[in-house]
Image 1 (spheres, one colour):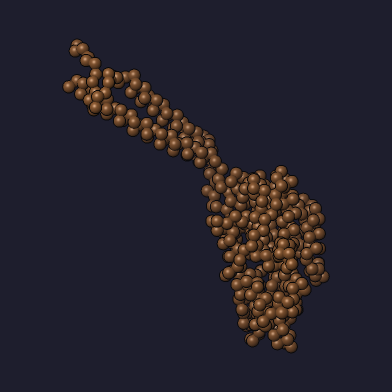
Image 2 (cartoon, helix red, strand yellow):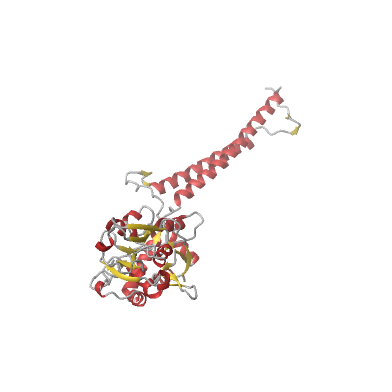
Length: 399
């Protein structure tokens, strides 16, 4: 009986010890994971990359490189030259000190990934000459935005010590211009870092994406097809009449302009810019509205695409829907609210205090496991040998 009692107690304690060891390993793993999570920086998304692009734009303006690109790509419009903020990054082009400092790359942030990979992947519809499009002959990517990004990356490369280049990938619009661009940018399988397609920075778009600082401002232009060529349509008042057909691309500022100013006309709202040009070429519409410099480039350099359409008017800037262009990036993930000063652990900031507590807990659990192991080895009686499920012990003297 005495041997059986010892056998039962031994088996029970051994099972208890094994369970304790298993629980200890689980607790240690959990404590380690918690400590790593608390110590690691938060995923910050794209704010750092947006700031780097903005800093690069400002350096391009300050160095005079920006003005050289404007002279190369953008038609001169005498009536706009008096505007002191015509070609700007949201501030006067006479600025001598940058507003945006180069950001420090944050671990796991977009800027850190671009620097590590040495590639900035740019998504674009590539159909908005002179800003970003394909050369009709070579199919190479050309335009103001392409050269601007190349220049920005030269400045970024010098700042961060890594030679960064741009890779341009096409984005197809099937429904709404801005929404489709954001969908391509934020899709789970997307590797696009930024979108460049002459995208206007509208407050209504801010919940869907974030922008760099603005790098261009454009008024609206009116393209006239050959439909009823004798009908004069060069002002908003003339176009805002029954029987006049106006073509615009869905989800663009041109559509906003038409909805605001041409409520009496018939609107053809098209999915893509190619569809709008088809309306001009086939004379399905009298006029089409687009950003002025895109319309001017089409009429001058690709008139066949729009049926030899004419640029008939320049609409003044409208402060409610001005086309201030910016590069588009993903929105950041929501960050936790700032920790109040009184919310501390052991008198330390919350993250550091939690890390120390997790480490102390890990040490205590390890100590308890060691004590249990020592008790099982040095306090419990050791069996002589095991045979089946019966433990045989050396007899103990009766006192």
